[in-house]
Length: 167
Image (cartoon, rainbow, N blue to C red):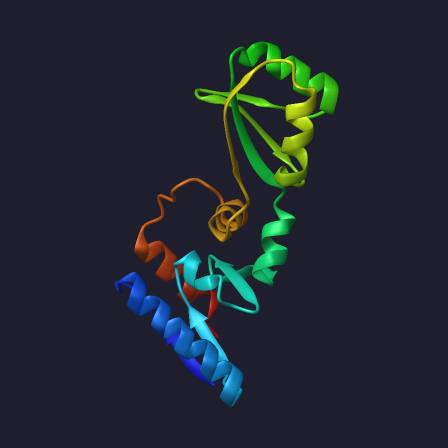
């Protein structure tokens, strides 16, 4: 078993890829179990199983793929020549709730690659721009732990830890 704490922090992309290649080979060839702690979700993508810890408790535990699947589908952002009209058309034709944003309409669909061709066939309003993004581990982390920056002082977290572990 090998314990690693943010093993590729501050490294350039080539070195990071080389280290992860070495670690994957070590797992495969020697059967080494890697136990990794990190704040970098890109590193966490390399895990077979992932635990998100929030306030000292395991808040989520599963494979990276399952955790991402649990928070929803793909986010599709479309900009049209008339977003107000497109919004009504999308809600009426597809039964989806689209959210108006500064640069277009945002909607969440199960599979963007399946949905987009159907959207282009049915939508009467001309589309100017489309982008799609699948959920990331960062999205999972923010949903599980909350999106707000916490205003908790370090000593209060320490005090809470001491209180929990007193005998």
